[in-house]
Length: 189
Length: 310
Image 1 (cartoon, rainbow over the protein chains, first blue to last red):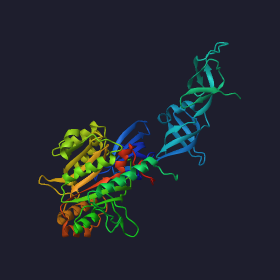
Image 2: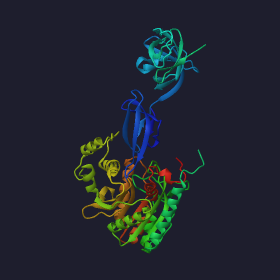
Image 3: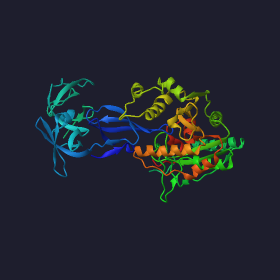
Image 4: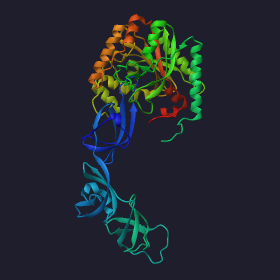
């Protein structure tokens, strides 16, 4: 496993601390007078998302994290694992329930995603910013209701539940912003 | 990569004024300006400083100290130099691999006399931009007691870990006492100092003597100046004993090897100058870029430099 010297630290560098993969968010070089230099570093835990501070002696060696972001296509899920394929090599990767997290609710099949691999194992996934999903269940809106505001819940074909305007009906295809889980518009053929 | 300078016209003018005022200050005091070579046969042995090597087996100076002391030994007169100095592996908001140093030596002065002159020149240089509150003098031991609640004579690992913890400093590995002191001074104590006050810290631990004399209490007759939240100057009662200096350089090299660094050949001409006889004197070096940062009110040294490689 490769190592990084603290001299090489910069934002974006990924390393292993206490057994977890971290991404350097900020790196500050400090050095008093003729004394020992230090790196005061802010890091984000790539598993938990938590941001921590750590001070390193200059010249300290830290294990590099074998982290890679790869373009992949979502294939299918059996409820236990989510399967992705790397389009150049056709290699398939299975992502666990913990790793896929909330992203699962936006995927129905064929979406182009960016999968983060740690030591060759899927750690997390970035789904497209916008997806188009069909409404499978929602209460009918009141006829002639054109009032602004007023939303109702709608269940989409993936099982995701989003708030939609009252005029949205079942079997309509909606455009959803996956970054905030919000209804954007109806998709007209 | 863009071609434009990263410095404003205001900052350019500021540096030009400071340079002119430095020259006037020393001219009226009969301190002679000198220029010593940037390229040297030797690197420095300092544990924490890495000299930049050039292709034809030369080293760029990390400070003009040794050359100026050789001048001092021979001509025995007050001298100053305003020049670029170079250090590898130093890059950050307050550090640059290449920076400007003002260094001078006063024959027959004590380091306490020199602190007063440093206060005078700083006050002169910043006068159009900042009105310093006042000047304070405090010993290394006292400043640790006052701002970190630590007695450096008796403090142990646990005490240092505690103070770091209290200030949300989480360490990745164990530190020795010197390293803890460096970290606490730089990251805990200095930020607490009043920015508009010139704070001189003097009488350092013997381990941090560098090229300063040790007094009867085994303290290094060394001082540093903090102003505007940064370390601006480092001064000594110059060590004149050639044998003691040689021993320190040899110890430096032992420390370098322990830290997996290369040992550096000791500057024989510098030692020879000490053997010939350095007059009793005090010397100091000021980081001019840092001073400009304080005057400009900027947090990044890049803003006072025309161009930067980083």
